[in-house]
Length: 173
Image (cartoon, rainbow, N blue to C red):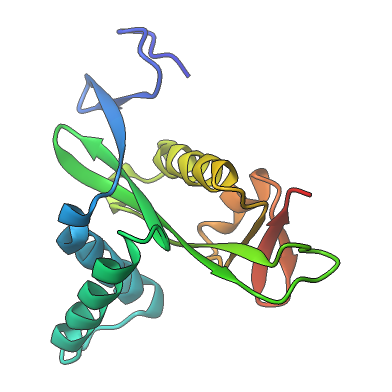
C-alpha cells in the first residue's frame, strides 16, 4: 500500500502525520526487548495479573534467547516506529519424526506475534508475519505451526493456515 501523501510503501498515519514503519531482524543485543514483549504477550493472552513469577520468567527467557538466537533456533523480527519497537514476531525451529505430511520433519513454530495496542489494525503484524515466513522458507522450512489467538486467526487464515486440532498449520509442500 502506498501512502497518498508521501508515496512510501507501508506508511501509516499517526495524528495526521505521515510515518514510516521500519522492520529489522532481532539480534542478541535485543534480548531484553524480546523478554518484555513475550511477557506482555503472555499477560494479555493469558490474563495474568500476578507479577510474583516475573523475575523467574525473565531469567528463563534470558537463558532461552541467549542460547537459541546465536544458534538460529529462534529468530524474531521487529516493527519500529521512530526508533521505538512497536511489534515483534518469533519463530522457533525444531524437528519431529518425518510423516507423510512433513517428509523432512522440520517445523517452524510461530510465536510471540505481538503488536502494541495503538498500532493494531494497521498492517504491522501482516508485514512482520511475511518476513518470518520468508526467512523460514529461505532456511528450508515448509511446515509451519502456531497456536492462534482469536485476534490473530484471520491473519493466519489469509496466509493459508488451516485449523488442525488446537493449532493452525501451513504446509507448503
